[in-house]
Length: 207
Image (tube, rainbow, N blue to C red; front, side, top):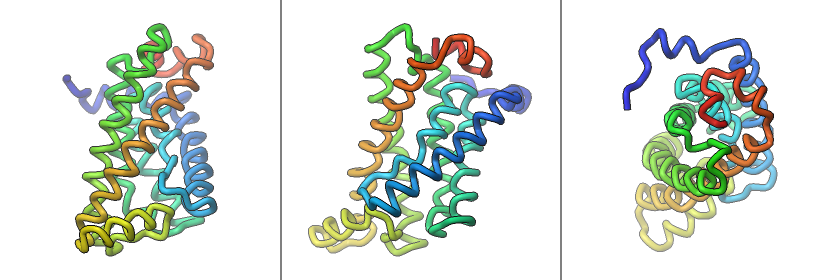
C-alpha cells in the first residue's frame, strides 16, 4: 500500500474535513471522559471521532485528530495522564484512514463490511495495546487512574510483573474497545447521506 506524500496529505485537510475534525475532537473528549473518568469502565471509547475522520478524510487527518484530541483533553479538563497517549491516538487515526481507503467502511457491502470493520478494529486494538503499554508502564507505572486500572491489578495478582500486567491489560481492553469503535463508526456512516459523505476527501470509499 503506497502512502501519500506531503501533497496528498495536505489534500486531506479540506474545509469540511477540518470542521469534522473539530467536532470529532469534541466527541472523543466527551465520550472518553464519560466512560473513563465518570463511569470508570475497563474500555476507552475515546476514538470514535478519530476513526470517523480517518474513514472520511484519510490517514493523516485521522492521525492529527487523534493527537490533538488527546493533547487538548489532557491539558484542559484532564486527567493529565491522557496527553502522553497522543501518539497511540495518532496511530489509531492513521490506521483507520488506511483501512478506510481500502473500503472497509463502505456501506454497499453491508453487513459484510460490518464484519470487516470489526476485524480491523480488533487488529487496530492489538497495535494500540502494544504501543500504549510502554507509555503506561514507564510514565505512570502501569496505572493511569482510569477504569482499566482494575484489570492491571488483576493481572498483577496473576503474573506479579507490572509491565506484563500492563501489556495484558491493553490486550484485553484495546481490541474490544476498537472493535466497538470501528463498528459504531461503520454504523454511523450507514446513516450519513451519500451527498454528505462525498464532500470529504475519502468519502467515496465509504459509499
